[in-house]
Length: 41
Image (cartoon, rainbow, N blue to C red):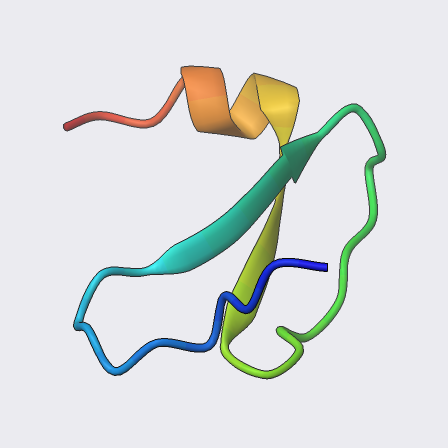
């Protein structure tokens, strides 16, 4: 398993097809794919 807990300031996120709504875990945010694609930069 890859260690993703770094000391950088970049957001950590998992983008998936699951419409899971919940808290982040260890600073890793879960985002629904459709929401991710509709985000403004």
